[in-house]
Amino acid sequence: MTDRSALESPFEGLLATPASRLPYQHDVLLRSYLLRRPAGDVIVYNSPGVSEAADAIRELGSPARLLVNHAHESMYGRPELDVPVWMHSADRAEVGADLEIAGVFEGRELIDGDLEVIPTPGHTPGTCSFLWDDGAHRFLFTGDFIWIEHGVWKAVVLDPALRGSYLESLALVRDLDFDVLVPWGVTEGDAPVFPVSDPEEKRRRIDEIIARVAAGGSR
Image (cartoon, rainbow, N blue to C red; front, side, top):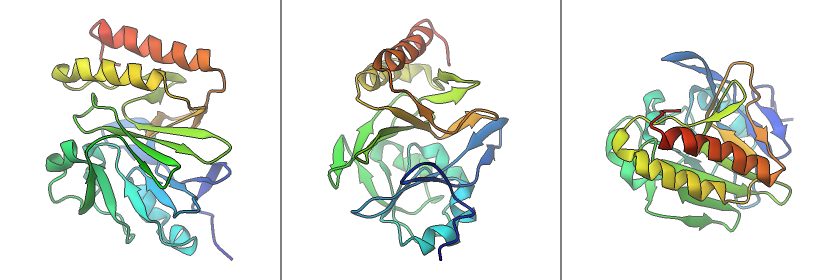
């Protein structure tokens, strides 16, 4: 029988690795996610939790890919798991030799009909969100592009030169059809995933981010 003690299941078919603290903001907890898919399991986000849960992941079968949202995930190095790593080409150079990259995305594309790669530059030039439709829910994985701080959806603007791109990406995501937000990190005490069944609530929360970023804010 598979030992899933290292994996939690916030939704059926979606498994979360153990949390890790962000080194430079200790109240932020990071997780990676295993998507149980008929076409092959996929891991979203690189974090220490992948190595911590490697045995449990292996027992469920070999994942087809690990999808990196943005280059900063490379600070944790290659996980102790044999899985091809994919990311957007615009962040490839920043990763360097920290991660062995099997392939890159250049634009918006669909993987196996249920998992969409959506470039959302702004946090970094190559930040990519991932929209997974498992038939019951539409999960949007936003990494640090949209994260949760004490229950509030926030941005992380690091480069003022990318502010315009950030705003365009937020406008794009605001119009996407999704009902669960799955960021890379949340502050301690927040749930790792955020169900949002009301489209108006989703738009309001993203409009609030747009207003702050447009006014020159970083969050």
